[in-house]
Length: 452
Image (tube, rainbow, N blue to C red):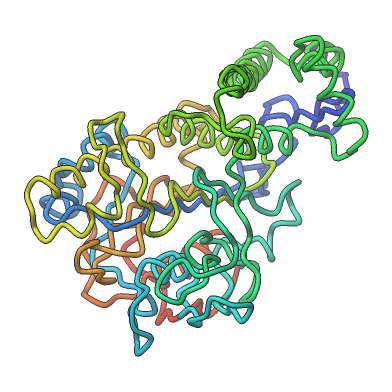
């Protein structure tokens, strides 16, 4: 490369209705954090919620510290075992009734990222608290195109009664901008794709979408001239990185298009007024993974540094026929120690962990600076309930993945004292995102032992 070429600090490949954000390139240090005089990759933070707790006796690893063995539910994480911490003993006290009676599932989602007790109402008087992701977004979200990204796979109402007098807003959201306002998640992959790769000009975006559909073009076709100009100015390793990145974008686009084609083929068989939205896969595994891939691209290109995803809503009764479990998840969670039901719950839990493993392996596969994208992330996975039969909120199933830019020491099982607030972990994660605060939710201090 000609060292005399002066490259702009560009962030996007642009075209009609399209703005494809660039990944981190050696030639163009377009994003990062200044550390010890050098530009280091930024840290990212994501939260993943699963409903209905886990199968008792099949979650917790044997052994603690680095000498731990994954449980049967956690076995899919074997390839990334050294990149995760299993955290035992953490509690959400505000997920308990505390005088409010039934409604544990709604509370489990409401409290998950807020550490706050939901006000029991199914009317307009909802009140909870700001969630940890939105607390961080309020402080650092201005550094990226999107302050945060909220994803999910199961739609849900934002009003009405969903659980024993609790508003559906509690059951269907884990991200809250403030105590009155949930951040509605996006469940349609097409909408997420257009949001990430559109250029914010609504008229151009609409024209681009019409042309792509009419001429069967890719969104990449609209930025290729800009891409060719960039390729002339970057080094060989960066060209390879760009090729891998644009290939990933195209693969996601093709998967969305394939889903939409299937939808159209089945449209005539659908009941009038019950048409399925475009771009939502019938296959639940595919749905989760395409959302995971878009989260990866959003982090890779620094479109956002904060994300959340609900694998399903609180109290979800989704069935899992693809893995041999036709029963509803919520119904099974009231297992009453029936061994047949417990085994089905274990299979559902393992399926969810498989999808987490997919996300983590995708993050780890992307080189970033001297390490990889996962090393610069903090990915929290878990549920706001321990055992769906007992509806208990202590010793929650929690995994923390990634190295947080060198601030975490994974590859361990860490057991904390009973009743240690999960919000202590949130406080520590905020600190690692350079968001300073003395408390969060019902926290009592920072969580120790995260870095050894």
